[in-house]
Amino acid sequence: MKVKIEKPGYSDGGVLAYFLLKEDKIPAEILKITGKITDGEFDRKLGKTYTTATLGKMKFRRILLTGLGDKKDFEPDFVRRAAGTAVRHCKSIKCPDLSVVLPKLPEVSPKSTAQFITEGAILSNYKFMELKTKKEEHFDVKNVNILAPDKSADGGVAIGTVLAEAQNYTRELDEYPANLMTPRKVADIAKQLARKNKLSLTVLDEKAMRKKGMNALLGVASGSEEPPRLVILEYNKNRKNLPLYGLVGKGITFDSGGISLKPSKDMHEMKYDKSGALVVLGTAKAVAELKLPIRLIVALALTENMPSGKAQKPGDVVKAYGGKTIEVLNTDAEGRLVLADTLAYVAERNPKAIIDVATLTGAIVVALGRHAMGLFSSDEKLAALLEEAGKRSHERAWRFPMWKEYGEMMKSDIADIKNISGTGEAGSITGAVFLKEFIGGAAWAHLDIAGVDLIKNSHPYFEKGATGTGVRLLTEALIYLSKK
Ligand code: BES
Ligand code: ZN
Ligand code: ZN
Image (cartoon, rainbow, N blue to C red; front, side):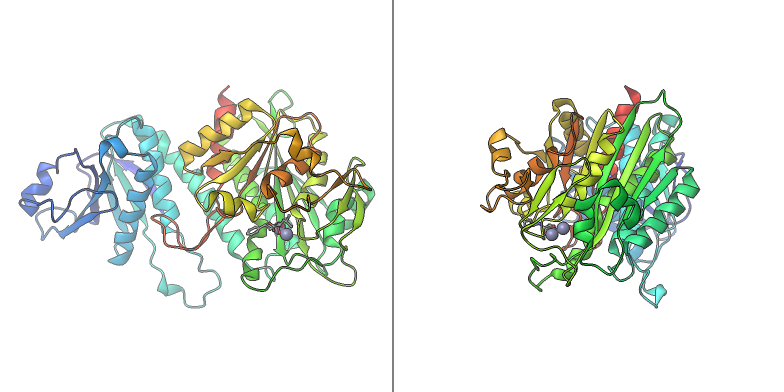
C-alpha cells in the first residue's frame, strides 16, 4: 500500500472518504449528490458509516462517510480506526483506491492526523497469508491519498508509513509457528535486516554464550534440540557522540513451560512468546529508516523452552552473566532467566536507558486484560516518557509499583535470588523486580506485553493474530529522545 498527500479536488476514481465528528456538517458537495441524509441513516457515532454510489455525478465511484462520535469524547486513535474502517470498506467492494479528506480535529495537528490515518490504513490492510497456498482470497488496497490543502501534513505520512510497516514486519514474523521460526531463523532474519539497514550485527551461539557465562539463558535452552542465539544489533555504532539507548527482547520461540510443563489447552499460543524480541527488532528497523540521531543497541534473547532429559529441573541453580546465582524453582518462569543474562550484558555498555519488552507473565493479562501493557521502571522520567508515547501510539502502558517489599519476596534460601516467589501473588511485579537485579545502575523500564501482543477478536485496524504492539510506542519514545 502506498499512502501519499494530494490536493483537494484530486480524484483517482475510487472511494472518497470523510471522517466526521457529530458536530461536523456533512459537506455540501456530498449533499449535492445524496440529497438530505437523515440522522437515522448516518448519526456520526464512532464507527458508524454511510456509503453510496456517485452514479457518475462525481469522479469518485463511491462516497464513504465514517463517524468519529462526539467532539467531547474524541480520542486521536479514532482516526486510525476510521482509516481502518475505510480500508475495510474498500476491501469489501474490491476497490484498490481510497482517498480520505484530511479531517480538522480537536487537539491533533494536521501532521499527526495524517500520520494516524497512514498507520490505520497500513495496519488494517495487513493480513498474514504466507502459509496459505491460495493467495487470491485476500484483496489489498493499493493507494491511499490523503487530500490536504497544504504541506503541513506531509511529514506525517512518511513517519506513519515507517511505523506501520515496521509493525507489520513484527506481526508477520511473530505469526510464524515454532517449527518455522526457530532461534536460528530469527537470527538469519536479523542478519538480513542488518544488511539492508547498515546495522552492525553480532550473533552469539551456545559456545560463545558458555564462554561468557550466560548460564541462565543456556539453562532454559538445555531442554531443546534447537540451539539458542543471542542477537545484538547496533545502529550508528561508531557515532560515539550520539546518546546510546538499549532495547532488550524476550525471544522464546516456543514456551512449553519446560519440566514445569504448561497445560495443553492454548499451548499453541506460546509460539507468540517471541513477541518481545520481534518488537525490538521492528523498532530497530523503524529507527534506522527514520535515521534518528541516536545510537541504539538491540538484543534478542532467543531460545525454545522445552522439557527433555537434558532440560533444567525445578530446584536447579544457575550462575547468570555477571555472577549472580539464581534458584530456578519453576522452569516456566523462563523469560526472566533469558533476560537476566541479556540485560546484564547490555547494561555493561552503559546506555542512557534500557527498555526490555517481554511476554513475561500471565498475571499481567489478569490485571489489565488486553487493553494495556504493564510498565515497570526504576526511573520517573523514563516511565513518564513511555506513558506519553503509549498514549500517542495508543499502545497504552500502565505503571505498577516495585516497592522493596516485593524484592523481599524473591530472596532464595540457597542462592542470590529465586525465579518465582512461590506465593502466586503479585506475579507481574515479582517478575519485574527479578529483572531489576540484573541492570546495575542503568535507567531501566520493563514492558510486560503478554496479552496485548495478540488479538483474538475483531478490531477496527487489526486482523486476528499478532499485533506487533510496542513498535510504535518504542519508536515514538526514541523519536522524542532524539529531539532532546
Ligand atoms: N510466556 C509466559 C507468560 C504468558 C502467559 C504469556 C500467558 C502469554 C500468555 C511466561 O513464560 C510464563 O509462563 N510465566 C509464568 C510465570 C509463573 C510461573 C511465575 C506464568 O505467567 O504463569
Ligand atoms: Zn513460561
Ligand atoms: Zn514465556
